[in-house]
Amino acid sequence: MRRGARNLITDVAGLTVGNAQDLALRSGVTVVTGPAPFVAAVHVMGGAPGTRETDLLAPDRLVQEVDALVLSGGSAFGLAACDGVAAGLRAARRGFAVGPVRVPIVPGAILFDLLNGGAKDWDETPYPALGRAALAAAGPDFALGTAGAGTGAMTGDLKGGLGSASCVLPSGITVGALVAVNALGRATAGEGGQFWAAPFEEGDEFGGLGIAAAQGQEAPLPMKRLGEATTIAVVATDALLTKPQAHRMAVAAHDGMARALVPSHTPLDGDLVFAAATGLHPLQDPVCDLFQIGHAAATCLARAIARGVYLAQAQPGDLQPSWSARHRKG
Image (cartoon, rainbow, N blue to C red; front, side, top):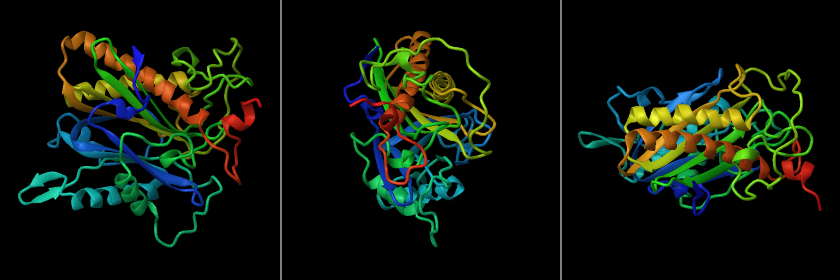
């Protein structure tokens, strides 16, 4: 496998990503969309998820494709970001056709960032406007770290953030990942700043620090309360997949989360992975191609998680240090 040209999920042809954030709010929204609908699926492994329209992603549901996927801060309030995205898509005459009416299909997932020091005293929820702004900003390039849905994210010990990574398989199929890291667990091992995802790093995309020395691990204690932690992600490919095949990609991608965050999938996390397939490349060898796509999705997600934490930017009033503030020398 080799890294994609941008090392972003938008290396998957047919996808664009937009961010919108409010630094005073310490929250934001990230939207994955494209010029045409795409196949999507979802797999949830956390014990405290917050979602919208994920039931329709099951393989036996009528709708086979979606118009956008939304990752948002704001806990349950953040689900309203999907309203703003749907409004923008409707204005563009996008959506599932029901007679003369078009209904945009916009599943979403949220993370909890209500206790991160931001100004949360709104009279009217800001998330629909943030969702629509993120949709309007969608393109091939987008910011990582303290941006979009990762703006107010935190982990067990460091600021979280928005991360992305991609790779190209020997078959020519591209796989990418996008993630907002707000985990109960830690992305780094020990005190030296090395990332749990280090074995999968491409070049020095998150510092090139290598693997931490093996050490005994104490039984972890929860640093957040029930519902306060969640890592939400999208893994994508330009392969032609059915909804069941996309679901298997989402299932496999959770392995990458477990490789990059310790612990993962706890009762206090709402860990969720969406899968997206734009269908540009038919599978040449269904068994081998699906095997490699699942492995690549897990690897890209592990790398994306480390990049999200590595690239988080320090802001006045932070409740946690950024990785760079704690570990970068000089």
